[in-house]
Structures are given as structure tokens and as C-alpha cells.
Length: 166
Image: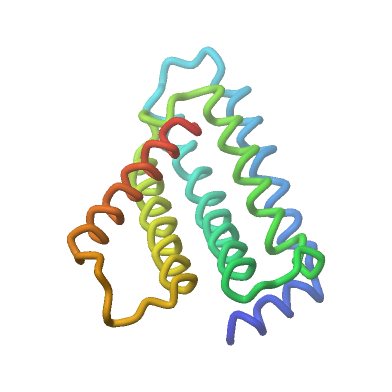
């Protein structure tokens, strides 16, 4: 099954995906209400970790797909699939805000791995877009070390921005 076939299948029957992405923020709210006042932080952090992974994996994929489609494929925003391109991102944002209001992300196991993964994806997309736009030729006056330093600084800037975002 290709990605196009998968999207076509979900587009013909979007309700399972819609229900999944609506249940995740609701579940985060219910867990936050149930965990309010509890002293068992380890148990609730594991529950929140499951929710974070359940919402962030499709959310990060949707963000990456949107960036790819809009930057490289030049897809019009009017042709975007709401269920597959926007709903996962909205669900991820709402779920992460609900979780952040109840527990710091530093207590959630593996959250640093997700943010590191997102940083890597963002940096790679940025570099790919940069090379796509400049039409890099083999002869350049910019030393490779300057390009490498720029890439590392971009990684650090994205990492810093991500840490300030949540």
C-alpha cells in the first residue's frame, strides 16, 4: 500500500481518523482531571507519555508532510486534506497544551527524544529547502566549513525555539 492509497482510503472513510484525533485531547483532559491532586507522578507520567507518543507521531508526520507539500510540491492550501493534514496538528497542539498544564514535559519519559527528532526533521527539511532554492553548483566560494557551521547553528536555533515553545 502506498501513501497515496492510504490517504485515499482514509479520505473515503474519515471517521476513524477523526474520532482518534478528537479522543486524544479529550483523553488528556480526562487524565488531567483524574490525576489532579494525585501524588503518584510516575504512574501519571507514563500515561501522559503514551498520550504524547500517540498524538505526536501522527502530528509530526502531518507537519512534515505539510511542509513538504507546500514547499517542494507547491500544493495549494485549498487542496489540503483537513483530516490528514490539519486535524493531527491541531490535536497535537491541544493535547500538548493540556498535558503541559498538568505536568512538566521534563517528567514525561522520552519527551526529549521526540523534540530531538522534530529538531532533526526540521533541520533536514530546512537544508533540503535551502539546496532546492539556491540551485547549488559544484563551484562555490563559500567554504564547506561555513556551510557546516550554518547547519549546526540552524539546529541550535530550532532546538532553542522548540524549548521556548512548550
